Length: 137
Length: 150
Ligand code: HEM
Image (cartoon, rainbow over all chains, first blue to last red; front, side, top):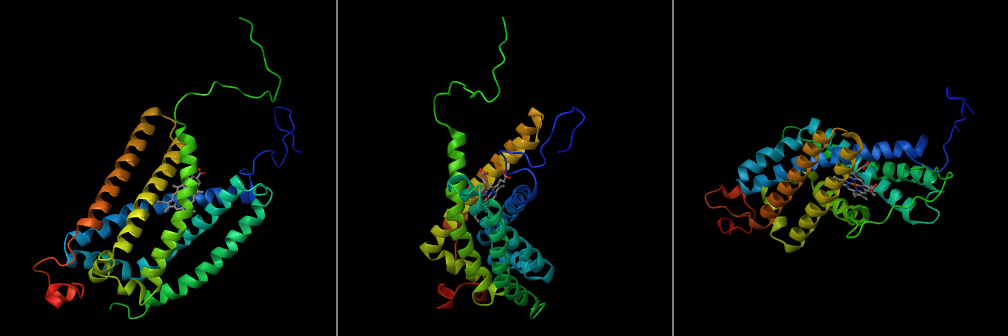
C-alpha cells in the first residue's frame, strides 16, 4: 500500500465503491459522455423532424444533409453511443437491483462490450453501404 | 456546548423530510424509462435505418406515411416524452455535479428545463397537427394516399 503525505495508508482499490478506477469508472465516464451526446443530438433531431410541419421541400432539404457520407459516419458514431448507453444502462440497473449485480459488474461490463460489438456489426456495414452507395443520388 | 464526536461508522440519522421524495422517484424514473427507451429507440432505428433502403428512403412521404398511422404516432410520442425527461434529468445530475457557483447552476438548470419543455411541446404539436397533404405542394413529394396522387 502506498503511503501518502499525511502518513496514512491508502488502499489501492478503495473498498465500498465500484465507481473508482478500472471498468466501474470507465463505464461511468462513457455512460456520461454518451448520455450528453445523445441529448444534444435529440435537441437537433426534433427540430429537423419538425420541418415536416413547414413544407415537404423544407423537410427533404434538411433530411438530405443526413445522407452525405460525412454525416453517415457521424450517424454511425451516434448509434454506437446509443447502443453502448442502452446496454450499459441495463448493467447499471442490474448492479442496483440484482442481489449479485455489484459482484458481477466487471463481467457485465465485458458482456456490454461484447453485445455492443455484435450490434454494431449488424448496424454499421448496412448503414454505411446505404450512405456510401450511389453517392450524390 | 460540548461537541461530541461520534465513533466512526455510526449510522447517520437526519430526520426525514416530509412530502414526496422527488429524488427517489427520479432515480426510479431513470431506470423505468431506460428499459422502455431500449424498445422504442431500437425499434425506431431498425425501421428507419435498417429496413428498405435505410436513410436513403427517408423523405417527407416516408414520415407523413408513418404519422398517418396512430401506432407510430403513439410510438414517437412516447419516445419524445420519455427520452427528453430522461435526458433532461440526466443533464440535471451532471450540472449538479460540476457547476459549483449557484448562479451558473441556476442558469444551466434553467436552460435545460426550458429546452426540454420547448422540444416536448414542439414535437407533440408536430406529430399530431402537421398536414400530410399540404395544398399546393408538388405531388411527387407527397405520400401516395394524398388526394392529388389518387
Ligand atoms: C436506450 C435506452 C436508455 C437506457 C437503458 C438508459 C439508461 C440510463 C441509466 C440507467 C442511467 C443512470 C441513471 C442514474 O444513475 O440515476 C442513465 C443516465 C443518463 N441518460 Fe440514459 N438511458 C437510455 C437512453 C437515453 C437517451 C435517449 C438519452 C438522451 C436524451 C439519455 C441520457 C442520459 C443522461 C444525460 C444520463 C445521466 C448520466 C450521468 O449522470 O452520468 N439516455 N441512462
